[in-house]
Image (tube, rainbow, N blue to C red; front, side):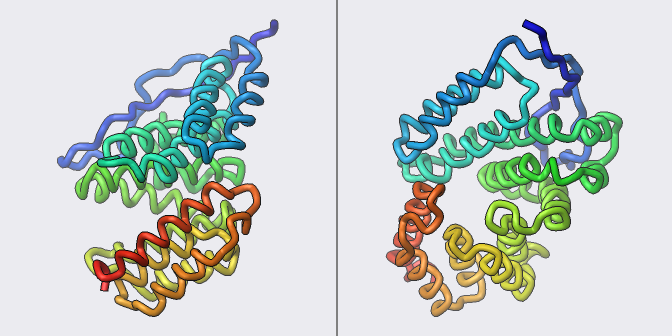
Length: 294
């Protein structure tokens, strides 16, 4: 079998310290050749079969284990890394969150997710990896990536943002600028990616930044744009309610958005039934706990 080789770079993951470390100064500790050692396609196909039934936690876990195996067989494939990045995110957002005391397991999943997303960016945009390796700041280098890097950038930023929230306030402050720069580039390249994801992100972001009050008019504008791009993606309305409506203390909007989520059919986006059911479950819980927010 002919080996396919691709020069890749593995970054130091490292937790950020309170003394001012940031993703800007993250460097590559190792440079090596990533080598395909076999055919990952059969493993990927088997994983896809399990993933189709990801509402079953055991099958979702099984799919992720197979993707992990496939990534070892062929570490040159960005698509496998993307599957892992979303898989880890899904496990945390749909399954782990409902466990008793889930924070540690969720944090671990998001950490794996951002590493997989970052790997996907390196693989889809080698020039970006070279720039970072050469010492260029993330916020500058990310402006050079093309549309091919958008999926990796999104799942990287989404997972690392969730990880930072669980790690604490200091980490949030350390990460916020490079995550924002990543999402701003996505906004330029493809504002509709994953159901309006860049606008959904900035909808939440602007409820917090600038500290401490945020910019609520800007937040509302982004959420409304995300809904106009795809109003069927229910997580947008859930986030609109629990971040903007709560911060603005708009109880009527909170109820309106969440009741729309609860009333939506499970197959409003046929390929995302488990995600939709989870959003509806979250919405019901928020409505039940409404007195905690208003």
